[in-house]
Amino acid sequence: MRTRVAVVLTFLGILGSVLAQQQCITSAESDDDIFEVKPEQEFSTVFKVFYPGDSTKSISIYNADGTDLYGEAQDGIGGERKFFFRQCGSDLQPPSDAFPGFNVELPVEYIVVSSTTQIGQLMVLNKIDTVAVYIGNVEWVTDQCFADRTIDATEVQYTSDQILVYKDQTAFADALEDPLNINRARLDELLGSKRMLGLGPLGEGWGGDERFVTNEDQSGLIPHIPVYASKEKSGKAIFEWNEFYGALFNLEKESRRVTLIKEKRWDCIANKVEKKWNEAIFEDAKPKVCWAYYLADDYGYGSPGWVWGNQCQ
Image (cartoon, rainbow, N blue to C red):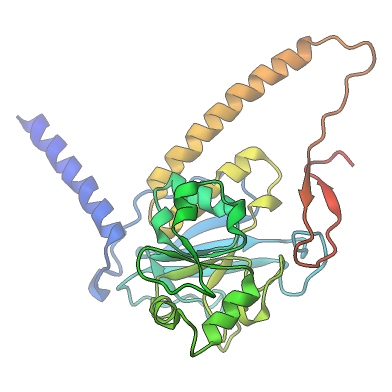
């Protein structure tokens, strides 16, 4: 009987913690630790999740080489940027080293995506319904259910459960600043939420619009955080970006579970490939395997075309 009671109490305790993470709290609860599960990042060199307070978290983005995704030098990108998040209802203030003007509460309710890879990450966590705006070409989206929810936001008025689509960051910025925009009501709803977040970079690189850049005067149109998964140097590091997305929705436990599954499959395949490679017989020296990817020049950045994905230059 005691064992059953203990199990029930444990279950209720876990359930209470999960519910607390998905609900707003009162200022009096700001010192209660609601994030019982923390990411265990081992491989990423681009981001890190910290927990400076019991109802707050900080996501640091590193780009120490000071370059954009094309390898071109850019001012203000190098070093570390800390993006401070707090549970909705918390009155805790950001630390002095937090990125200025960034004010987002958790769990995130509305997401602006600027890449198809972000869509897949949100699907894994069952948070695809949080996407409110998609920046890009819908033809690049392979998920038909997602595509069916999209509307051309420059011509069609939002009704319900639809995703506003803008061809690029500039078109989205223009719409946000237009007082007579056809979707003014929906845009005002999004802008009025403290739980709206853009996944960028919206204001730098990839055709970004400077109106999204958040300065000390908090002049940025919407809060956004750079997503630099492509800067990682290994597959396992990229897998850990599951935990970046999980942190946005207080789903650290679920995102960690997904990461571990991916890492296990990676190790299995890597071991099989290594075994076959070691046993293979070549007439000449073993060939060197190199990966490359293509950067399109849709935004006039002078793309270099094919770029090496590892150290094979």
